[in-house]
Length: 358
Image (cartoon, rainbow, N blue to C red; front, side, top):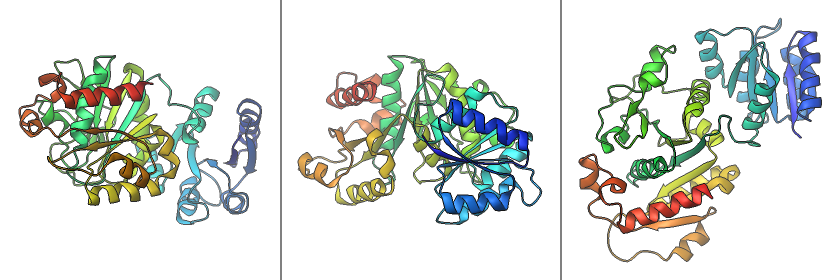
């Protein structure tokens, strides 16, 4: 059971949401008919989540969310904008204010409850797709290499989509031998485009939603837009592999929330291990969904896994063996899963996939 704050100037909406959240969701519910009272309740009661209307007499829902986000005491509260306003500008303003997601009135009870559970980390995202986020905040550790190869292995199990969320010229398309003539950057200028029109299909059957080939002159996908995109993509895929941005931006944060499993890629060298430790200290709530894959970047002696595991707060799944051919096969657009399927490297990647599916 979670504690949920509802802020709406409609008495009927407050009554309806109270019934839904208490009787169907089994949540504790706090009600407020205006923004100021809602902020005071948030400070005193510390709810887990707030459902906020937009148009209210004393302040807008966007102002409420900005105030919540700006106060360290309430910044942790997950927020849902629930409004009758559904234009693209409304979604954009909500995202800029810091809303976690955006729903339009009237909303189906099942959709609202599923969204609440997703934001609170209680259920997988709807649609049936297993979402795997691949992250690595230290540069040059092979994050995209691992993401591409894992996606190709999962494609052998079922329809897989690879999303490259890098806002600065991601390399997933290059590693697959594809030109990113279509990419998610088009959604920033034309939100009405269909996702299928932006995807490219690899010869293996893997679908790719590429990143823009040139660095963006604006921020990438905001959390609300990405959340809506996930909901669309999950309907037609069994697996979604997300090559996450190299920073903890809005897209990375949303992926951390939505992913069922997370793979952190790191080298076993001290600077990279230190970055992994610090990142995991910031992300204590995802350790149970996290696997660490150590990528061996050069030949020679390496620290024992036992010592590294003692230093890392999440489990090490495997250490990928050094493979001097990696750079060459990737430049040729033929990842190891396709060009060297019997190699020791691919054998270890198969172990990762087996763990992800277990």
